[in-house]
Image (cartoon, rainbow, N blue to C red; front, side, top):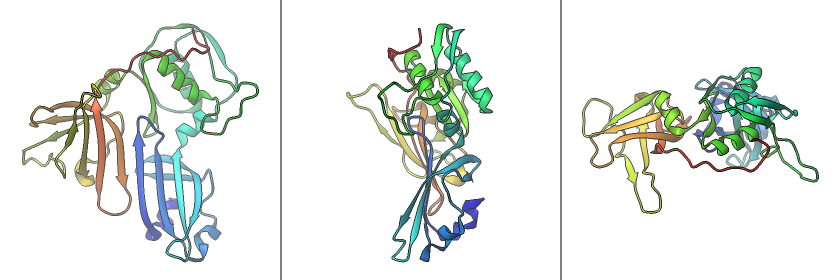
Length: 273
């Protein structure tokens, strides 16, 4: 709602979502004489909603704004903030990482999709180490705990559209919504540009990038599946990795995806057994 009040002043804006990075909505507005800033519409922690995404202001920066003043505002998901701010000590026994995650998400009122995992003798929420300094991005919390547990299991852990996801890519994509791109067809499912594929001996994964008109694709989020048909050699289903929605300018959604592959288990060597 706050964004709607200043929409006519927006000069550039986009929302970037990824399974590897925290969702970020960033927009720049012209604010001659910083009158909007004076109105107090923006402050760190101010709720912002876009396309159903529940976000909060995380960064406010002043800019030249064409020489008269402007603002750049960055917003991040409320769900991520809640997990990053959950820092109290918690130690459980005979519980699986999945059960641990579900219990934390339930306590915070966050929906989650989580693949079952084996019980562990003990799991402890990350806590600060003596003598170490942390900023808000890496401070030990429920968020860092689930990142660590996901690494131990060969799972992915990320937030998308307010929901927390925890599981192997193959398990998650099997249950996720999928959209179809039909190439060399005239049924309205072909993208705006030719899909760009990349396969090399540097990686086992095929990478895909494409632009799709906003009115054609509707809502799509990281973790979804994209099925490409009628394309030589590269036809198949891929995992959506990043999505960039426009707020200003042409209504084109930029999407990247890659082969659906489970990561190797990498023990973090910490507190869970």
